Amino acid sequence: MPEAILVIDMAKDFVYGKLKCDRAQRIIPNMKKLLESAREKSKPVIYVTDTHLPVDREMALWGEHSMKGEEGAQVIDELKPDKKDYLIEKRTYSAFYETGLDPLLRDLKVDTVVITGLHTNICDRHTAADAFFRGYKIIVPEDCVDAFTEKDHLEGLDYIKRIYGAEIINSKELMKRWKSK
Ligand code: ZN
Image (tube, rainbow, N blue to C red):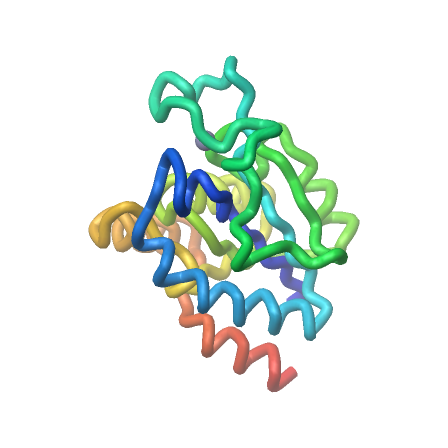
């Protein structure tokens, strides 16, 4: 089961800036360990981050955030990408929508995506939908995704599990599985 780890929207604006989410603090240390473990096992780590242009539709809903060329669109220092990691820009919720993610996953011979990052009920959920449509299996470590509220987070998890058949797991369990292989 070749997996790639997707790191969604762990940009400065999402954690500390214009769309600040305090609950992101809970997942940062878990994500850090998971990404380190993935790199040790040579599993591709792919950052997919909002890199908005002023004409993007989301501007009307959320205001400017994670704008191309600005500091706020940079991945937070705590989860700084490694040289071998992949960086992909997106302009709306889904990591797949009009991005190079799908061809990259195919080139990497990946059949499973591990979705991490923000927000469980928005970008993670839309990314899960597109992964499902394209035939990828989906794993969500519940301690590596979060949302503005507990309710949003739990609803997001439940939806992704019920509708896209995702496996919801704890990151420790997932790393244990990687180690035993
Ligand atoms: Zn956005």
